Length: 134
Image (cartoon, rainbow, N blue to C red):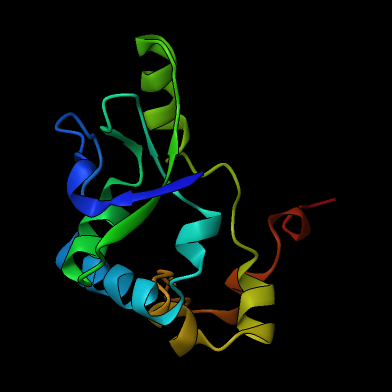
C-alpha cells in the first residue's frame, strides 16, 4: 500500500455502481469519523491510476477535503480487473438481523449506512430454519 496525492487517482468512467445522495453523505461522514478505515481498506487502482475498487470512497474523500489517498496498485490484465470490479462489490454474506436487533443500536447502525428493514411482526426476525412443518 502507498499514499498518493488525490489528484493522481482517476475515477473509473465505467464504474457500474452508483450511490444515492443520502448514502453518499453517510459515507463522507464515515470517513470523517473513522479515517483509519481507509488505511486498512485502501482504494484499489490499476497501473494507470484508474480506480477498480473504491470509486465512491474516492468521491467521498474529495468531498471531505482529503489531499492524499491510501491506494493499492495492482498490475492485472483486463479480465482480472473486470472480475475484481464486480467481485469487490458483491455481498455474499447476510446480516443476522436478530443479533443486530439485540446487540446493536439501530440508530447508530443507520448512521453508519446500514439499511434496516422494517419488520411488522417480531416473528419475522426468527431464523428461516425455524420455519418448517413436521
